[in-house]
Length: 233
Image 1 (cartoon, rainbow, N blue to C red):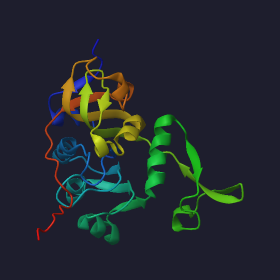
Image 2 (spheres, rainbow, N blue to C red):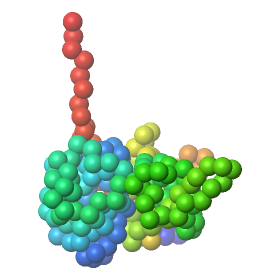
Image 3 (cartoon, rainbow, N blue to C red):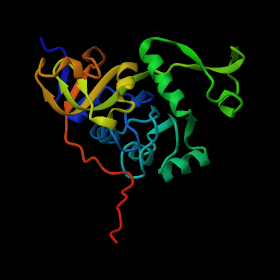
């Protein structure tokens, strides 16, 4: 039996996102982002979002489009990156930003998906990251308490998915996607190809279908964040 909701419209895939929702969005820079789901979210005009992602894309693509439309109230991520509008909104106080060390961000998301409410890490001890947080000492080393992250919805991007929701990613486009798939109450996967159940090699599956509630197939532009070319002699 095919269990997953397979959408034929990106607008339909995001129709249940309401104002004030918390959304995890996979990707690193522009690599592995669910770009069509993001575009549909822009078109939906939903507001007051809390977005959890490694960064906020660039000014004119990815999550940067949501920033342009003032649809994000709070961003939880690792760095500002190449996004000038992100920087402007942050410095002007228009956007609440929680910057988290990248490894800590990954572990907070992983913990959320695993049902672990909190953990201790040495990253950030003695810095503003640790202000107001519990500090404990283990084996003569200080650790700061970090809480797990979950979301109302997770948008992830995969290369291939089957109709059971099992996913395979393409190389480094895997990045934050698998852990976010596990940490969302509802996970929608944007995939480049949907195949029949049983066609994927079980040994190659990186996200089991138990974590995925919806699938949609779409073609991505796969823009390059910063193109570098070699000058010929």
